[in-house]
Image (cartoon, rainbow, N blue to C red; front, side, top):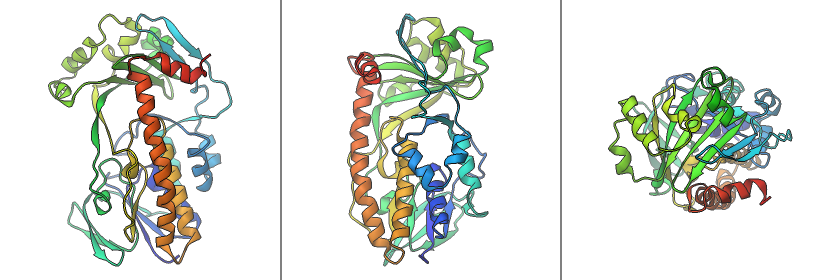
Amino acid sequence: MTTHVTIIGAGLGGLTLARVLHLHGIAATVYEAEPSPTARSQGGLLDIHDHNGLPALRAAGLEDEFRGLVLEGRQAIRALAPDGTVLLDQPDDGTGGRPEVQRGELRRILLASLPPGTVRWGHKVSGTWPLGEGRHEVTFADGATITTSLLVGADGAWSRVRPLLTGATPEYSGISYVETYLLDADTRHPATAKAVGGGGFFALVPGKGIQAHRESGDTLHTYVALRKPQEWFAAIDFSDSAAATTRIAREFDGWTPEITALITEADTAPVLRPISALPAGLRWDRAPGVTLLGDAAHLVMPNGEGANLAMYDAAQLGDALAAHPHDTETALAEYEHAMFARSAAEAADAVELHELMYGPDAPNGLIDMITGGE
């Protein structure tokens, strides 16, 4: 294949695609808005699933490097009631079916696997335009432009490539997360560290909840979930950390302190994360020379599959292009046909999961799902 592939976005999906293409001898360039690979934190833990994320890493030839990143014991799950009663205490079963790694470390090994210069940092896309015959122009915020015969949008929820294919945009799901961290938790917050345990944790009631995960070291990474309209959050001044913390914590009055400490004793300012999603089952007509992967193609409510699906999309797209080196349109059509089917199924699963987590029967339905109804 002689066509040079232009990838927008150096997240896990875009980098996995570049790596798989590299292994097949296909040239690619990744354009990323961030100025450097260390410009910001890359998020928390990911559990890599054996039916999508792991096969993608195998296709990228990085399974051994990935295994070296796995944090042992993080597959444990604990659930508490608001009064501190233990509802679920499931230890890590040691099977490794959902190995946990830090997202930033996974991105690091993907970057290291690419030829120097593959990623062009500090290239924020301002717009994309069709030029005809499958060619497209990409304009960057500094005024620079490029043209390409094969454009892949791996640029996330607010993709600048997506408008070439569909007018669909993400819509607010009705729930937002507030992100916090506790650092050195075993030493400085021992009661909360004990409550969370060695892996994942949740305390849920209808319409709200507190979820946490033990990351590397003694860091507890928390998402506080509230089913509230966007206007409710807009009334909170998140630039005033103390006031925002107090207002969010008020929604959990009466909960046991070892749980609410994940909010009230946080070592970082609370960060609002509104949850949006694209229409479930989103499809588009085949347009020559362009496609999407990951959240750019099928943003859903968080269900633990986002990064896995992005990497799997990337591996499938890379393999399809390699299988049809002289017919990229056949490759893109085959990739999209399969991607549409699996993303529709994941969108339905995500809605069902959030209903189990925050619906009227929370948390009983979620615990039954985890335990198999035991």
